[in-house]
Image (tube, rainbow, N blue to C red):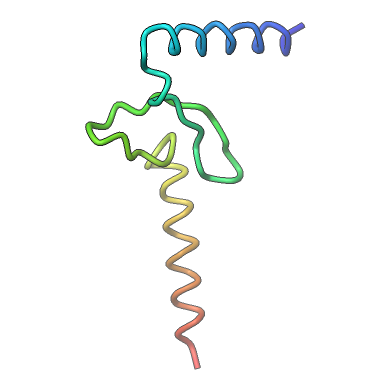
Length: 73
């Protein structure tokens, strides 16, 4: 029941976004463990993560760890 209601709500949100021309600002978070949808309020429409504090931090921490471990002899 909850899944059906969530799907119906998602369809309504997408339909509203298509109707008012904001469809391009609806995005999904690029963090593989998240994949939440969010509305990109940034001026240049380049936002990548749903939350810089959580998902963005995870991505940047992993990249930093890879750089540090690759630099070790």
